[in-house]
Image (cartoon, rainbow, N blue to C red; front, side, top):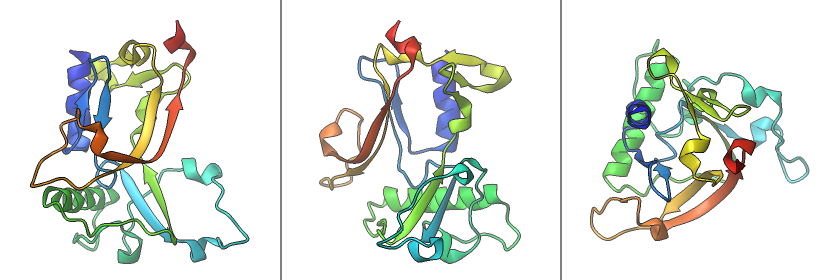
Length: 191
């Protein structure tokens, strides 16, 4: 029941998410543009990045990010009121991106001359204890029980074009082309 409750909470934040946690190969899949709490786009040139200077994350990456108000710093175009909050701007971005995904629109691309900063719900996962904190209603859940001895895999992938309006079912991983991937291990997984 905790797993189902957690998935319902995650579906609230990412409606297009597909999740199957209680299986030999658990997974959570969601469009990269609609899953994060915030997405900020910055040109490399504005960050002082060029062929001689590469981007290096520092402590500012852990600061709370706000969904940008400026059109040129947004992942997709969307309309909100001039005084809208970061939360309302994020909702508008998620809705606009999900609409593009639902229509099978392939115009959305990531540019190599931009830096994309994503903030997910990573504050819900305590990496020291490997527990997911779902608040006072659902409590804390030990992630190692879900992992079946496997690491938590974090990846971004491109879904290869499919025929018709066929949706990814979770079992069709062969349609995913990884962009990057890394594994998070915790000592509790090995016990």
